[in-house]
Length: 160
Image (cartoon, rainbow, N blue to C red; front, side, top):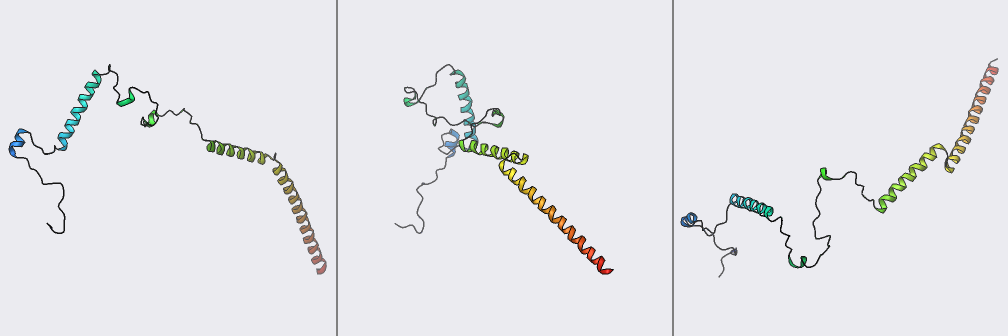
């Protein structure tokens, strides 16, 4: 039989505790957060006490763990390290790409140092070119000076 546009929810009806159940403490109503928190704290305290007493007992293992010794790296969860616990002096191994990148940078720096000192083949060629260019510029400057002096001389002669 249709009940209109909305379907009924499958959760059932609400159940309210009677005052007698509340007094007796047999209510089926869920406990409040504070009560649950208090129970959790109590459980933790009991567990701590039991751990102190059971330090002498060997750990019980589930299923086949006790029978077969397994070395599965995925079984244990990785422990997160805090900043104060990290070992600074411990060197991490670099990957091949990182190592090659660092070697490449060092080689480039070494080459640039030699280049500045003029010890590489390319630096020698550059210095020869620079010397040739300086020589050409000096010659051109001398020529310009001579031409300028010649013009001034012609002007002075033309005035006379």
